[in-house]
Amino acid sequence: MYRRLNIRYWPGWVAVLVVAMFHVSIASANDWEDEALLLYNSGSPEINDLRARSTGNERLRAYARALGQLHAQPFSEENALLAKATFDALFQSNPNDQVGLASAYYLVRINHKHLDEPDLEAARSGYRYLFDSYPARFFGELAFLKYLLIELYDNESDKEPAQRIAALEIMGRQLTIPDMKRGYHRAIGEAYLGYELSNEKAYEHLKAAYELTSSVPETQVELMLTVAELAESLGEKDVAIAALQDFLKAARGDDRRSEVALRIAALNSK
Image (cartoon, rainbow, N blue to C red; front, side, top):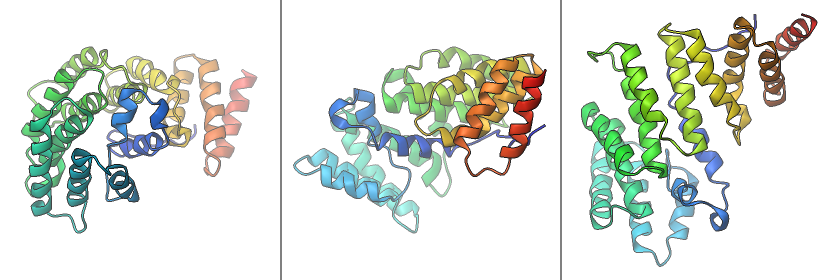
């Protein structure tokens, strides 16, 4: 059997989503796609692009300045708190426009990732608030994915993993943005595998994630292998072959290509 990674927790998928979103045309974008352009996970050159776009827009200018403070190197709590003050002012003055909602997300993110002593409970409740309060908005749905990961991998929870997953599945049905739906299905599917609860449920979710076409297929190669492995074990030969063929298209330099090709040949011979 071909080798695959055992992915149980992969926060880096969001960075890939950001790269894809930078290529969206603002003129033709939906509202949530416009909002996605305000997401930055590092002190990247794109923040300079945001500063350039902020000419004549004081809210966007202040937002770009706060992002620069938050991601300044070396990272420091002092800079995070300076950024937090700006994000808070932007949110308080208008919690519903794109800058206000993006600021609200970063306020929660600071509690989660940018303090010397992160406040996990504040982050959990903040992400849940954003999801409940801003349905079908980019940062509302992104907040759900953060909330989902906290819930799934909270070692101190008094609820069993199966209970947590069941509750999250109900919430996840509200998602509307394809990238968020893919992230949700992938996280839930990996949880079913990681906690060894159900290969069938894992396959259901991971196949749903696989079927949501990504603009960056190279980021989905491990998902393709996992879907193929589960499909084969559950008697879904055609799905297994299709996923392996997609892997060959996406993973041009992967050293597993030869064994994947052999596996396709073996499946076709059955």
